[in-house]
Each structure stands twice: as C-alpha cells, then as structure tokens.
Length: 143
Length: 126
Image 1 (tube, one colour):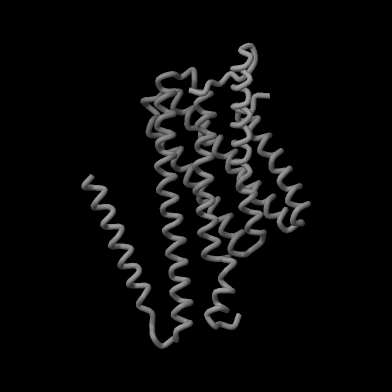
Image 2: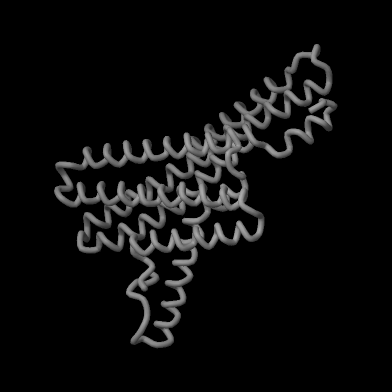
C-alpha cells in the first residue's frame, strides 16, 4: 500500500488513533483514553480540513495562475485562520474546563505526527529495499 | 546585520522593562502574596512569549513551504499531485508544533499542575 497519498494517510491516522486509544485505555484507564480520543479526533479532523484547504487553493491556482492568484491567496488565508481559530476555541474549552486528561490530549494531538513519522520510516525502508533490489520499491525518490 | 542587532536590542530592552514591571509588587500583600503574584505573572509572560515565538516560527515555515510548492507547481503542473502531498505532510508537521505550543501555553495559564504545590509552598491554604 502506498502510504504517501492523502486518502491512505487519513486511514492510517484513524488506525493509529484506534491503537493509541486502546493502549491508553489498557495503560491508564478510560479518562486518559478519552483524552487521547478527543485530542486524536481534533488532530485528524484538522488534517482533513488542511487537505481540503490545500486542494481547493491549488485547484484555483492551477486553473488560471495569473487571474486567480489574489483570490486563491485570500481563500487560503481565510480558511487557515478560520480553522486555527476553531482549533484554539476547542482546545481552550477542553483545557480550561478540564473536560479531558491534559496529557491524554497531548498524546492524542500527536496522532498525525506519529502517523507521518511511521509513513516516513515506511518510505525509507522501501527506498532501502529498492537499493537492494532495483525491481521493487517506492515510486518516490529521496531528492 | 544592523537590523538584527536593533531587533535583538529591542527585545532585550522589552524583557528588561517587563522584569522591572513585574518586580514592582505592592508591599502590603506580604512576602508570600508577592511571591505568588510574581510567579503567576511570570507564568502569563511565559505563555504569551511561548505561543508568540511558536506562531512566528510556524508562520515563517508554512509561508516558505507554500511559496516553494506553488512555484514548483507553476513550473511543472504535472507534478502537482506529489508536491501537494509533500506540502500537506510538511504543513501538518509544522502546524503540530504550534498546536503543542498552544496547548502548553493554555496548560500554563489554566491547568498548571504545579500551581497548588507552589501556592502551598508559599504559605497559602488551598
């Protein structure tokens, strides 16, 4: 499976989140697991929205670069600001009212980072395999 | 060089003023109240500077990433798929740093786990 595609990255995010929640539940109990789940959902939805924003912006630029340059910039900036403002409000409410475990929330927010690191390691291993056996391996190069 | 020197000096003077302002606690509250007040003042300052520096770095990083990606797509539109995925991964990694700084700043402000022990140490009944 090619992990380096947005769809597969999103699926991998959910798988990593499920594993983290299960591990957190077994290790620290339901309160910590709830923190991981909420933080993970925030991170995964944030990643999904980031992808949609980027896709929308680049589609606008790709259609006619010169004419819609300003429009695409405004679209990207507005979406980024809205997304980040929503994120700030959600995390503020979660931390301020102590609805979830703080350290669980931090672990949950790391879901996307963990997935990307795992995807990077996977690509690196594919490259190593490709060097050892040129007929197999990834389609991406290091450069 | 001169610009960075001026910026560094400005930052240094701002920090000195901040420390002077924070040192000027009212004497009537007693030593422990002053200690607790200065502790929470420094906590607020740390949270503010923390998220400020993180947002500054994130802004520069994301701006450079988007600039390079858009230039790459403009030069070679056929590679737009791979460039978009790489940019998505890069932006997510960069943004997560700012989210961590935000969470840490909010923890310092609202849910600092050492607040009670420090208040008790300074003689407050919690």
